[in-house]
Amino acid sequence: MLKQLIPSISNKTLSPLDRLGILDDLFALVLAGQCNAVQVLELMIAMIEEDDYTVWTNMANCLMKFHNLLSDTNFCHLYDTYALKLVKPISEKLGVDSKPGECKI
Image (cartoon, rainbow, N blue to C red; front, side):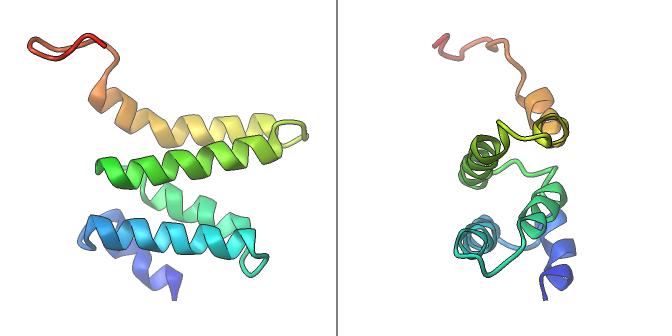
């Protein structure tokens, strides 16, 4: 069923609340041992062009939890590569330098 939702998630025809809920529910299933973590990682790759703040907050939370779980394993470097690929589009879009009129905090 998740594979059927991927196109609507990728092209953002599902609302941000729905995208957030799907990711949140799927991650909860992983934590409960009812779902494979790979499904969450595949879902987040499908969300690589995500630009909604609330959805990205949840994605960042998932990324940090996975990082904490994998930080002392042989998979750490592979995961870091995955995470960098995922955050690259949004970081390029937002940039790191403030724009005229933006707060410098």
